[in-house]
Length: 394
Image 1 (tube, one colour):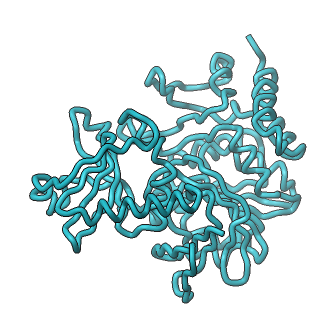
Image 2: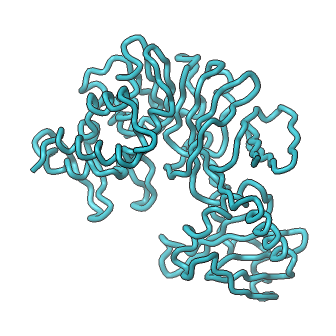
Image 3: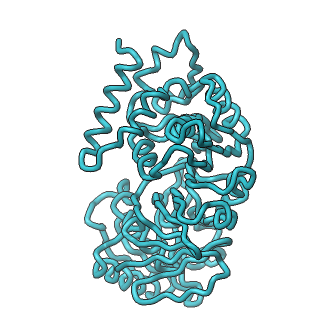
């Protein structure tokens, strides 16, 4: 049986292989060694056995192999299905720490404390002259994070049980900010709370599914993207939780009652990969693109014999033409008229001509909602409640 340090070493070696082209920095590796992951888990949910495990100093050795896998650890679930708090996979966590370009003395805002592991590693890098303000909306999770931080006698981390969507003005202005949960909007508070030239690392949720990690720099009028990649994170809860971008139950569309009997065409469309089970994977790029560029794009779900696992698919719903097209079960199915189907085919051709981009391939600028903006060629503006996102392909 390996010791904790041996498990740490094996995991770090794996992470170094993953990022062999862009090695993890020495300062981040030092933080990783100083803050062992297993010290931040008091209780977790095993997804394979579907059981909860309580962890203490007497039995923790039996869980080390789980804690030092390069995968997420589930801390809290809702309705035995939806994960609402996790510790992200270590390879991604260390990469994100490097993206933040942390320096001693920095003040850092974190949305989503989780286990406290990320805040603890940040605290090690920013040192005694810096400080981390980690906001966690779920009381139970905030209590667990505080327990870990207090247990390790970390003095430069404050875990606050509050809605991080509103920032934390008492600690502002911040040199760095990190969102450890996915969000659809950039709350207005961060235009004031992040220093000019400061960095914001945020996970942006897309109505097409999947998430995108963007590193943004604060300038006088907006945030501008520097780096981006696809990822997957739990969504924020609280004031900036947005259920309306989740899949629509197609049976709730009033017109569906009649439209489902007005099928006008059904053409095979495999997206380069046969089999309905792989629809989400094989269409990730086009869904991400449509979520940015097409206002009529929708994701749908319909109930089946397994209510906890509904069928999910996507399409265009052009209400003014009473026209719907669904990409489902290796077909494009048109209802009402062919208008929506022809529009979707045109968007697919546009996507291919542009190089088949997903959201992470776009350049991004994020502005306050009241700033006048104009989109030029290969630019698209997506407006949310507080902010507007200018997506560009150049």
